[in-house]
Length: 431
Ligand SMILES: *Cc1c(COP(=O)(O)O)cnc(C)c1O
Image (cartoon, rainbow, N blue to C red):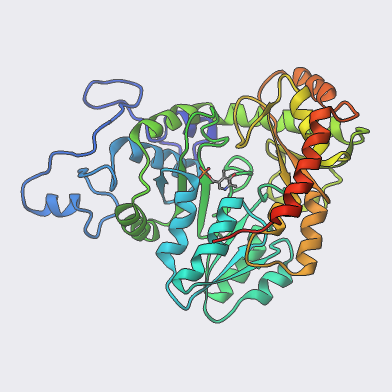
């Protein structure tokens, strides 16, 4: 494209998808092939084997590169304004790739005290087995982040807004801390997305997305991406894709390319519907508190406006007055809302996360951190809403019936079972 800075709507349709030079197809060919015929011995073969090049002319093996995967990498890089991208079989494969590539025994890493539970468990449970020290820090508290820096801090991994609590981190300010520490800053930007926030422009080194969420948007695949500088990504490709092997299927890359063509349209509607839902729920008698970065009542609304506005994402959290009993009753009474994990689907999805589950994840949180998590998640738990693309009046009407009180019989029984389960087994993770 000739425009040096094409707009996202155009990027999502055109980047990475030129007319196929072979058959002249407008749409991207799907290269379902693990292997590619190699050139003869010589410089071209050297190139293909990716010895010292980030972008070989020829492909060899799909775990290294594949034309359909490359198309997705190019589109996501263009959308994020990154030099390059590297796609993975899932968001978790992308998230684990960074510390496993960049860190070695004796290094220290700072992570958000609350983040996507899979990341949180990986940082807390496994990195110490490789001799990496991990500090869990409230990344909304800049002095805490600065105080956690040590001489051996090599990597800072933040998430904003945080899944599931919708707390924000000031990317530019943490990038300053990271730069003066000589560390690398990675931002999981899944909840904000490239239409609302551009962590690389704010000074981050890498951006990560779980591509199967709003970016793909159809709820039909898993994929992940790391976006950032070419040179760094080349090393990550060698360690994390060639050796750890979390390669994406070309079929899923092809689907994600198709999903992305409508991302700007869809995401704008997700944001609009979410704001309408958040406004409707604020003040609802069954609800203690609504958390949405676009509401004036969000504790970091100013930062949200500065860093994400004018849109605030498709996720809304509610603290139900009736706790787990109300959540189970919600599931029973809802017709349109589906009770399922994940987010960014066309369908509206609800999922209940008990606060204790997050407090039990290692390494242990300080009392102040625990109190902060309880404030964000509610004393019992949070009902996480991924607001879908159905008619907003239908979405809200169904909320109205699903939030009826008192709890159903099943809801009351579930609350009792849950309490008994905690009493019997306790919470916390075993290794
Ligand atoms: C879902 C999610 C992930 C994990 O991605 P998968 O594709 O499910 O592995 C990571 N970070 C955030 C913020 C997520 O929402």
